Amino acid sequence: MQLHNLKDETQQVSFVEAVKTGLGRNQGVFFPNSLTPIQDIDKLLDLDFVSRSSKILSHLIGDELPADTVAQMVQNAFNFDVKLVEVEKDIYCLELFHGPTLAFKDFGGRFMAECLAQFNQGEKVTILTATSGDTGAAVAHAFYNKPNIDVVILYPKGKISLAQQKLFTTLGNNIHCYAVDGSFDDCQSMVKQAFLDDEVKQKLGLNSANSINISRLVAQVCYYFEAIAQLPKEQRSKAHISVPSGNFGNVCAAMIGAVLGMPVAKLSATTNQNDTVPRFLQNKEWAPNDTLESLSNAMDVSKPNNWPRVQFMLDNEWFSYDDFYSSCVGEEETKEVMKKIHQTGYIAEPHTAIAYQGLKENLADGSAGIFLATAHPAKFKDSVEQILDIELPMPKPLADALAKQCLAEDIKFDYQLLRTELLNKLA
Image 1 (cartoon, rainbow, N blue to C red):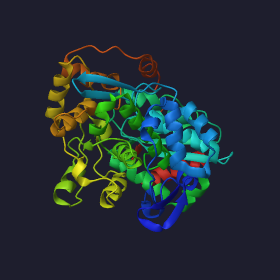
Image 2 (cartoon, one colour; image 1 turned 180 degrees about the vertical axis):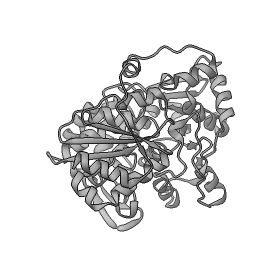
Image 3 (cartoon, helix red, strand yellow; image 1 turned 135 degrees about the vertical axis):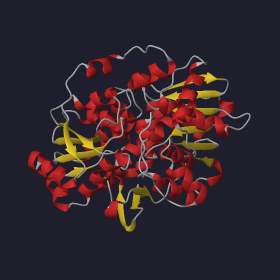
Image 4 (cartoon, rainbow, N blue to C red; image 1 turned 90 degrees about the vertical axis):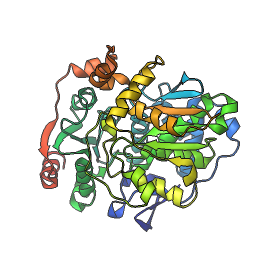
């Protein structure tokens, strides 16, 4: 796979280089120069999830890794279920929360860990990442106690759920966590500054596990094919997928799947009140506002890093603007949608409810609709119980994590403070 930096096309890299580098020059993200459709999609969809995912990833990565190596990596990473549940007639929920940290980011985090284990060959690596909720846990668990790898996670203090936080701040050992006095975008900006700091990059062997890393992105393509495979065959070509969108990596993966030949008719990328992309699509003006806190905190992003990748595919007509929708769902509407879904007998946390609403707004008659459940409802236990007036049982991984001590350190939104801390502790 040959990729280029979307902010500096002279920087051309292989898949291995892109994974090890993370972020390109001028804070640009890497993206494939081209995507070749997969032949015989029907045959591909007949395979089981792990076998199909191995073929998809081998197709994308090309000859940089042997097919049997990729197959083993996929088997190690994707060792949990993906479920498609019919919630209403012709409307399905793709449950992506059956992994070890109960969120969709287990797919990308675990595959990235497999990639770095293959590529680094004993070199020191420091994974530096920001999280608005679920990335932190997925990355922490994927890399926990991996030799020669330290993980540094920044998160906005007090702005993610306690369950989300405890899943990664209680591990210790090679997992180092910092509660930043600021927003997710502030955390993200410090990560970006670190990648521009040559001394820090060199001494720490810096890499990122955010969805800016191409290994996470390609891994996420696989579960969209699984969603289509689980649909009745007659509904596949009419499917409309709705993705709750914050940093826009997840919907980017869905669009890559469509370019590869996955039979999907339309895509929705639905945001919460941080509506930079919906406004951009309306008036073609990129005007991020200050990040607002919401019930769907993992989507509290006003400057989505993956939007350049999505826009590249749209502008180059790899996917049609006419088949791409993006709207926003406010706080009160989110609560009402959660109640509406609950009336069907299904329990949705806020992010899932937003994806459902984005689907319902644009679903054509006669089409099958798929909305994503990106996290287990219990990760948002307090808000779900309060809004739906129910009691949620606590899954064992969350109960175990909540009982442990938080090991995170507080830090101000100041890159120089972070820089000093990292060099003193990890260099």
